[in-house]
Amino acid sequence: MMWKRKRLGLALGGGGARGIAHVGVLRVFEEESIPVDLIVGTSIGALVGAAYAIGQNTQEMEKRLEEFLNSPTFQESALKSVKEIRDSKQSNFTERVYAFFRNRVLLAQSLFRLGLLGSEEFQAMIDFFVPDIQIQDTQIPYRAVATDLVSGQSVVMSEGPLRRAVMASCAVPGAVPPVEVNGMLLSDGGSINVVPTMVAREEGADFVVAVSVRGDIHSDDEFGSAADICFRAADIMGFHFETYMLDKANFVIHPQVGSLHWTEFALARDLVREGERAAREKLHLLRKTLPLSRRWALLSSLQKSFTKNN
Image (cartoon, rainbow, N blue to C red; front, side, top):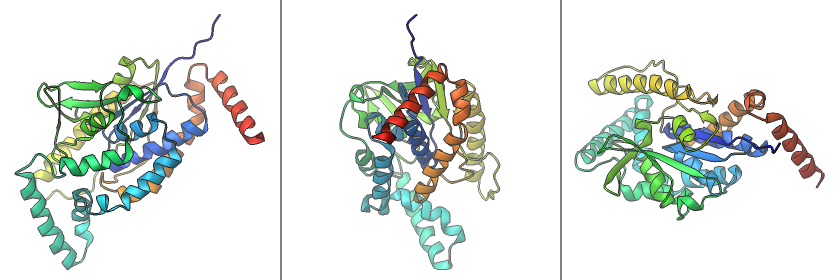
């Protein structure tokens, strides 16, 4: 009887900076020679997934991430300014005054354009990590998930420009302008598929490993405005919806990112390490759960032995 390994699909969830933990998870898969047959990503999961699908190893991904965070593109971006405004509550008087006026400027800008971040500014970030190729040309089959604001339906991108697909999936409502594609107005895939487990299965994965980077549902934040309450209600709704999505996976890896805010990109190195820790902690369970895992473990062991001896 011919042996046929079941197709493993990775479903990488959204979560802003917390999604950097995906790099650590992928590193464990890489080092353990776990075969990945399909990558489906939402938002930051689409960006990290695309970088890995084109053949970048995780060492290169982490190096490029550090280069980007130290670059003028990021240092002068509105994305960094949002982080500074959030931190202003713990700042001195001068910093709070600066953050107050910076906040008002960003708010005024949001009234006259479709996102706090301009399309060109955000596109520069995507271009830094993703090459100008077609989705069909990735080394690992890849899908990016977005939401069509016109029809209200989920959109799975399996062909066309890779950069455009990642841009659409990462277009967080209010922060990044939506992307027009074939009459659709595409925005963050997390509106419908926070972790795209069902999409991975629909696209042919027999065994779905979901990686969730959601924060803790408990919050000690003070609610000082109606906006604070609305944002909190949305977080609670998203948490329970994601729990439902994760039930559709065969296996779940959940890096402990706590209540870390989505703008904490400066903690990239720590987030990668947490992704590694979370994946290694569950590695033995994955070996037991994954179909035909004994054959995979044996092949992985032989490969490591060969690499060590050569």
